[in-house]
Length: 259
Length: 255
Ligand SMILES: Nc1ncnc2c1ncn2[C@@H]1O[C@H](COP(=O)(O)OP(=O)(O)OP(=O)(O)O)[C@@H](O)[C@H]1O
Ligand SMILES: [Mg+2]
View 1 (cartoon, rainbow over the protein chains, first blue to last red):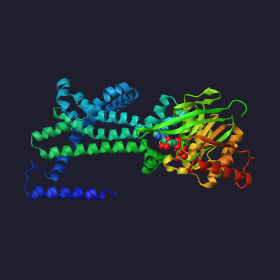
View 2 (tube, helix red, strand yellow):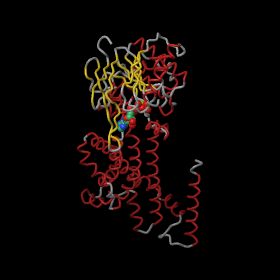
View 3 (spheres, chains in turn cyan, brown):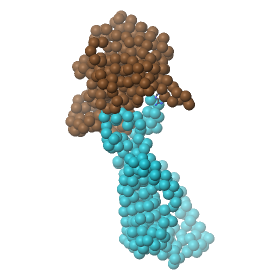
View 4 (cartoon, each protein chain N blue to C red):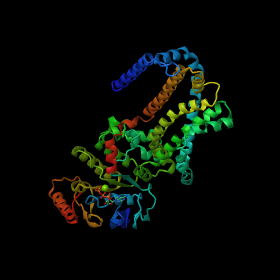
């Protein structure tokens, strides 16, 4: 809390500067609404924002993310286990990451219409790659000395996978998941831009078209909130699932490498 | 030596690629170990002791020569030798007890049974209050003790230990040395012990094999024909120690 305090000071200061600037410079409301106007808009439409739009967007982001995690783990493990597949597909996965997956949205709309499916797909596509890459990298980074030790105990390749490779890959998986979590809400929102019945992205676009700028900001506030929340959930899950991580210090890691 | 040796190291050579050339590390190392014998291997740091042990365990291949166990050439790892690596190599994601029972889990022993068996040994190893700790929460010496216990619960006829007592204080070391000596007497396992400590070698071993500095060759094999339990203060002990130190001095600096 004490470490977070300076951040809040900055946030409050910025909001104050913003608020007074819009008042004293008399900036038109459709250009830049004051934070207080945004807050009012948020409160006024909170009910519909939460019950309708957030529900849709979070459903797309959540289901898409979970699907991407399952797919990413499965495909990543497969690529790790079959070297031929890895050599064939891994470079493509890496290269395809440089294309922003959002450019696929218009295509998905052409193919799948305006329903929820294209939004789900775009979330899955956006989140899949960082997870698959994290799994392949994590599984491949298993420590050779520990694998050797396990082999000296008579372990099968399956036991090597379960007892060493998987646990080594988990921290890497969570790092990928963190990235994916930030993509998920964003991808769902952008998926809605091309047309949707409901959702925060659709709400923002519709508000922008009618110059209800304070509503656009209200949508942005919620989207940021959800992204941060998802991010925090991933961190919390990491903390719970990998309790041992906090005891592995730099010092130990280097000491081990030396011997 | 009468009868078939349990372990025969036969002309083992090994070179590592280094800096464009190659680094000869083991140069025709040969020795036999009888069943239930306790052999200490001593040699300067970097001479290739750990490499030799890994070859014996089947974890590295030799460039020339071979390993025989009970008269048969040993190839695949994981069948005959329990190995304690020089680095403890505990798994940071497993609690101490889970680390200790790892070899039994690999061998398919039910977890409850493996745990019950391991728990009996925890007090002797001073780990009874730490069975639920992660390795990152243990001291270097505790990690080493956990690794040592893990090795013994592997239940193989041959045990290969790479400097198992290096990070321990003198009391703990003495206690575990005594335990190792007793265990050797009771269970009749064949033990290979790599050590830097001449006194430890004489205290425990039936025979001390002295290796030269890299590339390692067998310089001398010294029988330790002292009655047990041995005292480092006995004149025969001191004399033997002088002899081994002299042998080491001639091979290069002690590691
Ligand atoms: N995997 C490897 N690749 C290249 N060189 C290696 C490798 N393993 C060992 N060496 C080299 O082989 C030599 C012997 O190493 P080894 O670890 O067997 O020595 P050691 O006798 O156990 O030393 P210490 O007493 O310090 O543990 C060293 O010069 C080391 O640099
Ligand atoms: Mg060594």
